[in-house]
Image 1 (cartoon, rainbow over the protein chains, first blue to last red):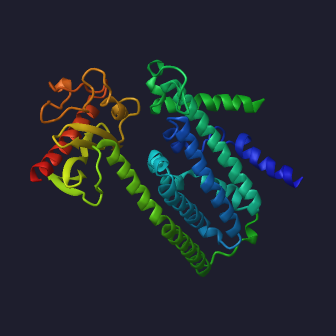
Image 2 (cartoon, rainbow over the protein chains, first blue to last red):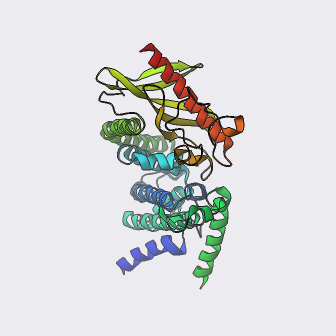
Image 3 (spheres, rainbow over the protein chains, first blue to last red):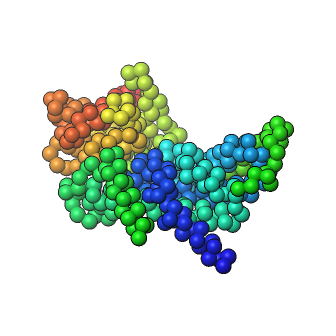
Length: 197
Length: 198
């Protein structure tokens, strides 16, 4: 029963309440970092790391924080983990850090994090909050990887940097911003259709 | 959600809570910073060294510690001299242009002793993916007059063909191409100053 409950929380975050396709949160990095599958996936995993940590920390401190200052308290927690992540990436994954650039510090203002803190972590136990972080984080990673893979495939003929067909048949629009909106819209439609069954 | 189990929001409790949380956050950040400071500096150094190695002729000195800052047209350009023994065999130069399609472009150029381009590496840019962003491959491609490698700004007119120059610019990204070549000329001017001073 207890185990089922945890799995249920993860499933909710991943599919039923997928942050990108269902809740439509965090659209800025979704559109900005999905030019290729690998950048989308890296961004998703980075966000997931911060989300799991911030969810657990916020759940742990929820009893001490007066409700009037809970939002600034959550923001400090989130910003701290993002800064830690950025320092670690600069030190140990410099090329990935250069690739994601400004989008790493911008995780602070990703509404998925504050959204999950307010809607979930501030009302549930540390372990449940961790599961929610994993589920939502995986959902975000899944969405960004799929978007990135489709855009990369249509735009450059590659998936994860592997050639599928010659680049000259690709259509550039999918790598650029308009393609991000088009692919995202179609994927939201597809996801909602699958979910409604 | 039951707000009743939450603490009362008195001024003291709010100030104390935020104070404690920010102090803890500060401590954590300071600790991580101490741990990562070394590796971050090393990663930056490695990135720079490998960029220099990939563009400049073979050297046996430490170009980073011998770097010189040269003034070119009111701006400063970093030159990393490549030496074998005491002889200057070339240099890696951090050329740049502010006139990219989306702002600044930084490119590391390598020159041999007589000013011929031996290689280049785009360090940072914000050009359009699929158009201007192709510059890291385009200007080394052997097709037509695209490549700048093996040519020297001293002997060839390093501007795009559209401006009556000798280099084929990137299709549909003339602004980026102009900026790239401007970065090359800036880098060359800086190298030329070093070379004549030597």
